[in-house]
View 1: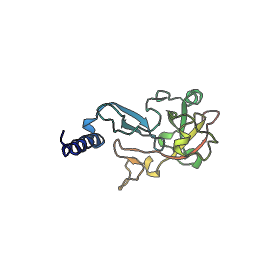
View 2: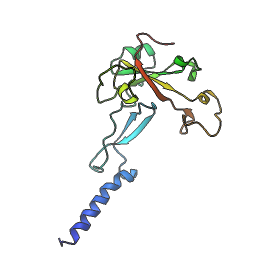
View 3: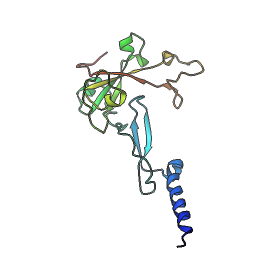
Length: 178
């Protein structure tokens, strides 16, 4: 290969690899659905593969499917690897979305538990422990059938529901909260 051609070939290869992250149609699979501990929304991530080796490793968040089939609060509290999430309406004496404090059961972060007391942990650290409960807040207009425009930042445009946002971390309750 001629000396002047080598840098052109290398540049073309680098450009092709870098394009994977910029062109999702080139790297459609594999994907992994992970639950964002700050919003509880499932987000899709590409994972590194032979076709797209430049993809970054996805976060260690829990898989969206982890503990998702548990809809009974007491069962969630008893299941290792699962953690309960709550609407902080209970703590603030406000109306709760759907009339219930228990939001749902979600899996714990795949990286493993973080040491320390639950109180004061951020969303990521709280999500790593099945003995900590995540408390989430919502915008007051989320309970309205037709939120005003402009829609609050807590509004999820994809499906017209309100997004819960991490508010705090506390020790998991010893019995269900109603």
